[in-house]
Image (cartoon, rainbow over all chains, first blue to last red; front, side, top):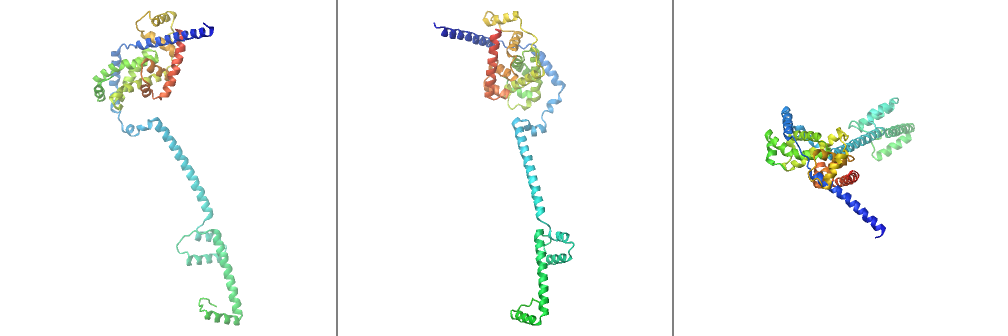
Length: 195
Length: 181
């Protein structure tokens, strides 16, 4: 028999012997059921301990456990923690988003009547002008207009008023021009223009 | 294992029937506890604690059929607690004489069953390097001869996890058997 095969055969025999030992050992352990002696002592001890604390059984059912007992389920707890973390994250993100938008809007807008007085407090002409404007057109109470828009409106209104006054003065200084204009206005039936 | 009627009576607080339940359940509980802990006194303590827990929580059990699984689950958990509390040192080492007796048993010269002391010694020696989970899987599967499904419902471990633990336990115990026997 070649040496290689002989070694392999010997190894198998050795392993079989060990497996056999292991199986025998297991078989012996299985067969030898541990013997419990003094069962009556255990019975007595258990019954005594139960009788010493009789209330425990009656309090076993409680509403809290019945309603919230499910929180002790492992997967339920981890799922709840995940959801809670997600919700807190979402809440923080939303709050920061809202705050940023409020800040942005605050920079963009102003309440018309209130802001007018504040920004043009040193210019009585502007106060009167806007007061007239709001009385005439903005009767709905508080409105929201851009600060820049109001400035542009006031400037163009004042500019137009100056030009109007200059024009009236030029017309009044020249009677021929005044007469000509009155004729033209009456021809076109324009009564609102008061010279 | 247990007559469902007895369990129903115990649920209603009948202590006399609970005595019967202790009598029926204790040997099963003791067998697992003893094989897991390798200590007779500790195993008896576990049986006592298990029976008290059963009395306290008997109303939670869904059906009498699931009583056996429930009993073993409590026993295994109590054994885990014991292993955690008392990381036992094997106080009683097998001497040459004892090994001779054990070898005698295994060689077939002695056909009588192992005594509790001998069983404890062998189990302690063979399983000393195993984790509590591996030990429980080995005891339930190879000594108590339970199926993987039963072990899964008792220990809460997945089938794959049980197989992996069992493989490691068998390998380790096989090596110990080669070394000592």
